[in-house]
Image (tube, rainbow, N blue to C red; front, side, top):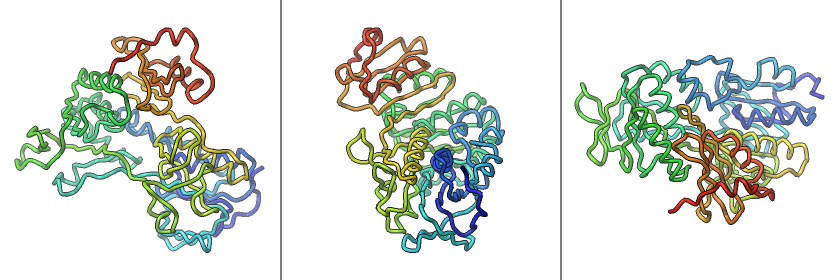
Length: 411
């Protein structure tokens, strides 16, 4: 049952900083587990918790209908006795007194604290000379509000970074009629996240839709002709632009944790239950680098499903359960009409196999260690995705029909 006591505005049994997917999941999971203490969910944006993946896809192509982005209707938070506070930026954590300070001067006490502060988009270095009013990132709803009206037919868009976000924005921009060029230091698209077969398929798909790729190259500055704004590349190539979208990765928001004396290293370090170096403080989501039963060392996965899984584990730990981070990570990306779904992490010590024909638009790459699937990349192949969810990281073997349909991919 939920808490029926009058809420204490200055104290929370569980205080959650960050109202993204992980923070929301902790709050929702606590109530699902019948936690009856007070929960305060503090977000620094003026919106209720919302889905971020559509920001680079449907929200850009079809316009922003904000209500479709909310995780739950606003009445949900009242019904679940979750004190959802918007526009609150936390400036300091004091573990010794178990309090946090907000920018408006408010101080909140806590029993357990959850850091779900997410990550921020990495910015272009200012020395490159790209005008500030031409640079966009896409991490928040406000970012989408700023970018969406600028994507019009004929507008030149230069995308820096050929990862998921960069390519999703490129696809949306092309579908809106913009002229798009993608620049990346790597030799192939999605090099850090996809196998060569998948990279080639998506790069070819973008080229077929009119996207220009400038790979194995780097941005060095901006041309001097005010009538022809162009990005200058190390190779000598020039990319005309009116808009520059930086999709060059994210930086975990671990500053508050570091200043509070918690252990951080490209993310807030946690154990298998999401507990930080302070026993009353937990971390979940993109800001957390956590121990995981399936991996050596600590990992930080930037995905919706990982944030959900982490949120559930942290809620269980607060309730005194011994659940641990063990879920197999999975990811997805929608570009044009091609849905990529990835289960597991591709290991260099695996043999890739192809199932299906990329030319058909529906195929999968299985990364195998012997007869064990370590990871699967499925393109418009929902059956293979479901099969991967059931078999990767489990003791359940692939069926004989699937094994028989795999063709080795030569290096």
